[in-house]
Amino acid sequence: MQTSYLLFQGCSRDIVTDSTLWSFIPVRNFFFVFRVFFPPAECAGKFDITLVLDSSNAVGLDGFNKVKTFAGQLVDAFNIGDTKFAVITSGKSTKIDFMFNTLKGGALSKDGIKSRIEFATFQGGDAPDIGRGLGHALDEVFKTQNGARLRSKK
Image (spheres, rainbow, N blue to C red):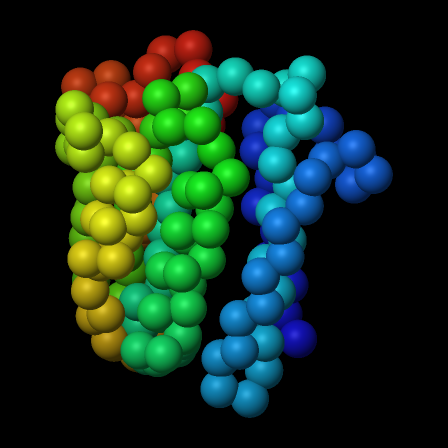
């Protein structure tokens, strides 16, 4: 069983006081366990979160759909407005699916963000280049002209 931890910068890492979301994602013969530590009330603030989703054959189409479901659950845990989301998929290539300023007006909602996540497509390919995805996040997504905020936590 592989466990991935998502921790949000600037927040307590105290497991007892943080609220926790567990999502068990069966992929082939093993489970990915995602444990997300959400910011406690005293740590609430503005977050700009970029999700880099594996869309390669390493997780397969079924696993990719489950990762998208998990990403939607993650969106549900935050207040949209205080928190902005961007999504990058990584498979045979790396693609920015949407940036922080892509959604506007009524589309800038939990349902709007989850709908855009659902539109992300499975790419296939031997292995994801998560490093390239993180590079795209730093070089392109986390720019003020693409909606990133100077005083938000990343």
